[in-house]
Image 1 (cartoon, rainbow, N blue to C red):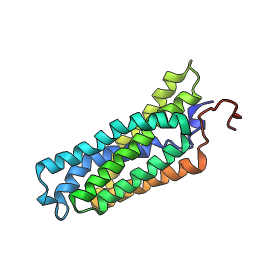
Image 2: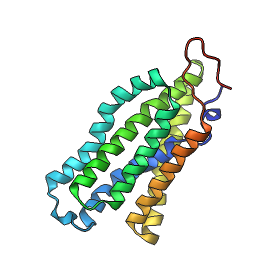
Image 3: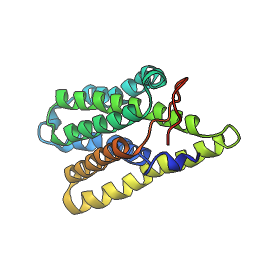
Image 4: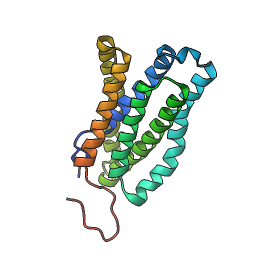
Length: 195
């Protein structure tokens, strides 16, 4: 079974779009938004560190969790958590709100990233698994490029907050597509194979 037959549209592309977009503009939003001029450099550093710290540590839990409960719902829920986090970045105007957003974005990303790679491992035969990971990574990393262009166009036309909302909406839509269209790929002993 080919990987692209499992995922109707690459859910990692919007995830990558959100990830790259968050990292690129979060500092600008923080510095330019009302009340953000009062943030110290160390507070901005904390906000920049929270996301990858939660993401990195969280993967240790969520990767193992996906081996126990399955892949589909961790991916769908993770995308929706990321969308909420991006919405908080756009709607927020204080350090505490952005700290919560960074933690949520890290948690959502931790739910999605190791689980998507596990999906590739679930469905790819060992003879073509590395090629499948390459195709997955092409689409996933392509999300960074698409996100940069899309965010730039939207930001130029409507402002940076509108761009954040667009990325949040695309991320939420991706989570909903996964919930509606993806089938569970984790094989359980004695379970019937997925259609």
